[in-house]
Image 1 (cartoon, rainbow, N blue to C red):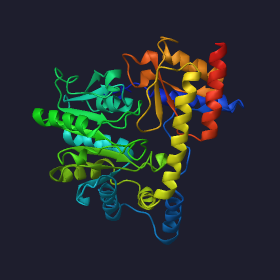
Image 2: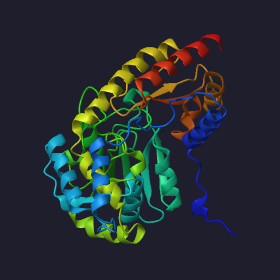
Image 3: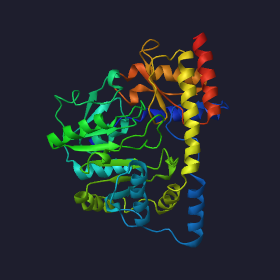
Length: 380
């Protein structure tokens, strides 16, 4: 049987690292997981209880393609609370995770052969989904000076039909301020290009609140999810915010691609939006873990790092230690029992000399992981 060109995408290397870690655990070893961007906490208790109650009282069938009206309204309300943005719930589209949001937005706003600019390093699935949809991912090398975020100067000579930006970013955790984000939105307006803002790590911030693109323009596409701040990765529920005139376009695609997002997950997500005290307790753990990482990584020999503004990652330049980040990560897993992600996932050009640490797990795990890294690197 023949394969399509669209299926010829690169593997998501972090998933390979997870599998190698699982195999090591099957032999009885305890592995410290610093590879995956997944909270170590469960979905909020209120979310789990709401789903249990719903399952006892009603069947869970299809919802309308755009999502439960109550959930869309509550998401819109969140924008008022967090950003003082008055958002019409009609513009909110509930999706099967942010990944479903990427599929819908790429399909709704771009044709085969269109070009979407991305800053590198960046989330690898952007370019792989684009490849599968015959959209050209145009990766722009960003600079450490600009904390690995794209600037209008970086994009000056680049031809593009869309621009995807993430703030806080994966793998760096860096954020764009209002002026920097606005400059990129203005650039897209000048070029009649679509601006897409991946805001999946909003809520996971440390010293200042992240800026949503909706504070600056209504003519943008925002992608978000319940996976990170709301600690619901496996529930696969997220959302889009799109301009009003594009809602019907997205709705038709959602009807045919997914019918709807999981009804069960939508019920849980609605309750999660009112579980802020529990979620802020999770944030206290991330604050502590971040401080431990910024202190402990340099002591272990990983001293070329920048403090993350948000998310739960530290991106490290390891060019003084290796020119093969994939083999180096394998070495750390085998010899230190710590799973980390090679930078090749995020930057095919420079990623052989970078790695990403995640500190989304428990503080106990982070403390143990740093001790193991320091011990191994001291005798390496």
